[in-house]
Length: 176
Image (cartoon, rainbow, N blue to C red; front, side, top):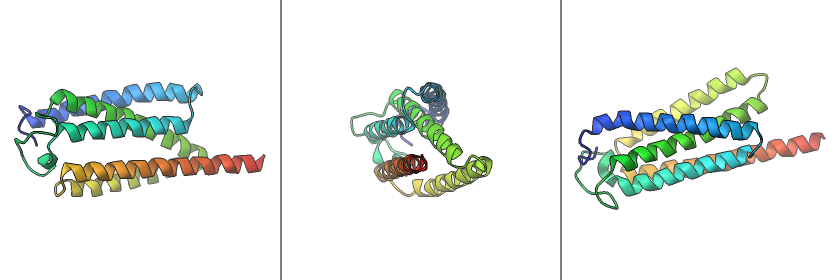
């Protein structure tokens, strides 16, 4: 909702394209890296949260805090908002998403081999509920609060992923 963008509504399409390109490139790179055992799932999910946190930091620097609530002509933290920087942030969010989703799906598929379609449906349902709940929050809270929330939830999610991965490895060692 920043008035510095010539047509803010057109930027939604640009952001979607940048996000999609990030997801495709990330899915390809990290899918191959995971398949070829170049790095483990925990490493890939760690890279994903770093991409997300990097993007959140630059979103904070690039967009005025009240831009999520109303139209504004205020400057961002480092000056006039940039469409190029915003598109770059969307690209990094796509990279982070591809890391997270590919590894979460791989982990769920490993844990619930017999019931994986049902588990993926439940995961998608919970994810959709979370996105819907956060969407309701977006119109009434400023950008800084939103970035704090998504950063905290993201870090908590990664820590939870590490815990589950550790439990699986511990259980596998005990079975040997």
